[in-house]
Image (tube, rainbow, N blue to C red; front, side, top):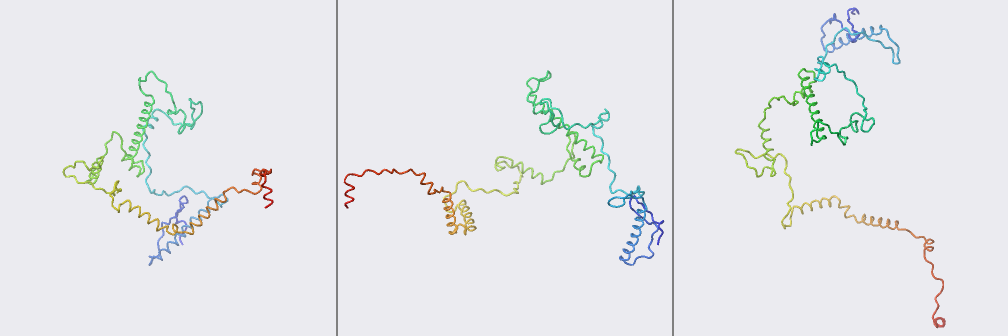
Length: 328
């Protein structure tokens, strides 16, 4: 066995290394090599565990806790250190003027309504769009719409801010401070005042553009004059077919054939339901019972009360009628 002094232990990284280790003999097979490596690995792990249990520990619910010392061995990084982003124009200006960022509240005071509202979003404080009247100034041009002027100024501010953002991305991409996918997208950003690298257009792309331009007319390029040597455009999609508005008087018309086709499909699928006589009789009986139940039933007591009483006085008989009837 090798002495523990030969093993170099770095508890900060939980790593052990034996620089003086050598195999007593060259392993003859892979199984023997794996067995030898497992034996040496178990010895190194045991030495790390012995060092850990010698450190001062504190008791906890999960068990004793040990604070590891600072690592001694510097391990190499998988990737290079991140490059700091270059400062933007505003950051350079703020640093020169001594301007410090301060966190603004989410709520602001709205003067027109004399209440506190959110600073951004729907129903925000001091919203320009909610102001019905704009006071005129001495510098205003007569006949100019103040609302349209305010919209134009806002549009220009947004465009300027977007342009500055794109320029900052371009600058960060040149330095290499952006991730690879963002850097690839930033290099293709169009910025006013810069010229992009000319792109070579292929023959197929030119043909597609020419075909689109030729068919972009009211007739779809049918009655347009063809240039010398121009080939007809290829239609990649399927043409839609419509039934004729007026058909002949023949027996077999397209519309009639389509209608018969649909009816035959319906009859073939649901023929047992259409020709089911027992079902039709049952449905008729059920409907009849429902109608009978929905009718208001009259009880004999109530009906006798509601009926008008008959005149109890008998009509006077004609003379001679009673004597004759009795005699008969």
